[in-house]
Amino acid sequence: MKVRPEYFTWPAEQQERYGSAIPEPDRAALDATLLAELFGRTFATQEEAADATDAIPPEERNRWNELILPLTGIGDDHFYLNEWFAEGHSILSFDTVRDFDEADYRFQEEARKEGDSAYAGKPYRGSLYLNWARLYVDGRFTYATLSMAAGYIYSQLSGAAHDLLEERIPHQFVPGKNHGGMEGDHIRWDLRVDANGQEGILEELRQRIWGYEEMRWDALLSAWDESARSGVYLLHQSHSDEDNLHVVFTDKGSLAAVRFRSFVRDCRTMRRSSKELEGALDEERSALARFVEDQHADVMRTYDPKLSRLEKRRKVLVRKGAFDELK
Image 1 (cartoon, rainbow, N blue to C red):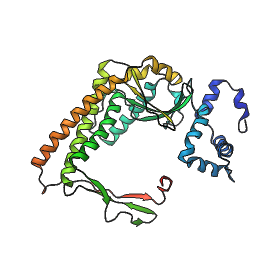
Image 2: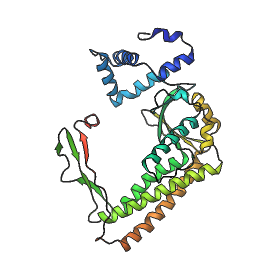
Image 3: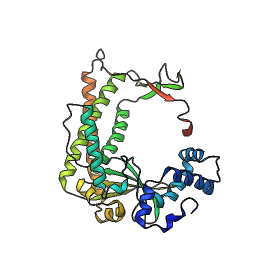
Image 4: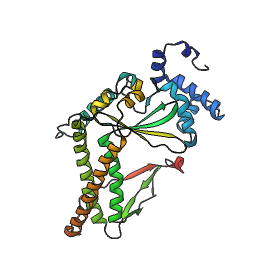
């Protein structure tokens, strides 16, 4: 009412277009107004208010996100996809989840081909992987994560692999000789792995595990896409202070059946039991454990400490003050 009172006279379609691409002057004015209304903070200029909006403390971020969602989200659930869109595009450019996902996949494939002339490309099998969204579910503000079943399993395997590697070869990161040193306005980030003399064995085993994970991800994408299950798993992962939902799609067919404007309703229409997904994950975890056990034994038997991998060493510099907000 303070910034754009005529908004309330517009038809829903015009309101959604406005909310999906709020003009910068309006956004700055809205930020300044809301910071004052919600938290009692006032600023001399709208630019200062915009900077303060980007630095809202975590304990206040949920309240902020919930309040602005009806303005920035679309459809029945005020769905907001936390992604960057190409210039001139927004979530309104895509009807279904597949429309967005496949367009993004095609773009990424072209980028991969430009970066690697030998890359031949792979068929589209759905590519959502830990994409973030916000929406209302039964009237409750909710953070959502969107993934393909293959991607969800892969993400879980990555965590399991880390634990299995730690069990086999206990290790930790310790500061290197250059860690914390200054180079101009930047801080040198130099951590190395301490595995009590087994650093070479650790790295060899880690590389094999990474290769296994990548192989399984690609195989799972094909297997799930060919299974024709076509459904959605809704995994509620809420915490005490916020509601979280992991939405897992079986294949590209399920993506095509879910529209952003009726997201929750469409997902529930295709809902499958999460036990099915967890059963598939248990099988992959067991196979991973066997792989790590076998490969660890093989590395211990064949590893030659006189040989080492040739690796490109990278210098990592962090802007001074970059981590201050995390303290």
